[in-house]
Length: 308
Image (cartoon, rainbow, N blue to C red; front, side):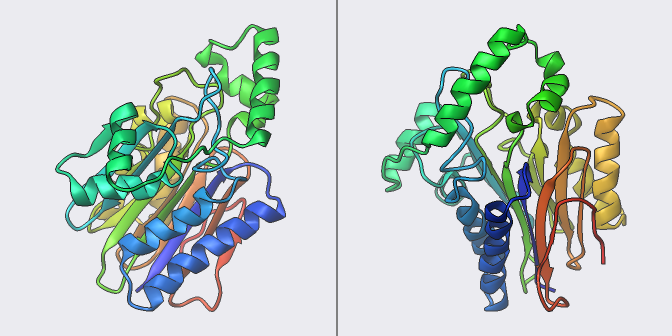
């Protein structure tokens, strides 16, 4: 059973974002249905979202407190537990493709900062500025608002800030794919939370936090990374799938765990080895699109979960 699910993070359900996840799923699913690998499908599906400036990944990523673009990404192959990841990387167009190079071309799991960027140049990735003028203007506005509120350095008040400024938590992107050889691959790419401290690394490149896959299932997370790291959200979901819980119930249980502990905004998508898809979230407007071989067309949702 070939299947794919992507998320475009939280945010407005506008036409550009909806079209973005549609194109992402169509791109990935076409690779799968033609006999391609889940690894290729996952990478290329995420590339589509990284190249669309309406998502918080690649071009258009959120900016740090000092106005820089510092991105994280990871991709993981379930059958081998091989994973490649990059963190705090700058001047790269497609961080998920660089993460795959870490997996394919090195014995490491995670490269960070200047080292990751130097590796990108060695691998032939040209220097690229992902900062957009729209994000620069948003950065100026938010920094001014948060400075006026006196809450800029109080992470414990972040949930309150999110209610007042939902633009702080926008479209991290991710994908989970299952191919005809029953390989499951999960990938995630992000610019992180707006106005994060310089040097901060979120959940995305941490195995078991923002990205995880085994031969039983795969998952990709989004939201406030500190909460996702503390609960190891994606590993929790994949472990539940391994124990016979449906992809949908596993996603819901993962979010319930987070709600009952760290109480921060998060969402998760998942696929099991039978092609069942699940997703859950505790924050409004999580944009998800998915398709498998039994469906005539893809489904796009900004609200409720699904399991076949």
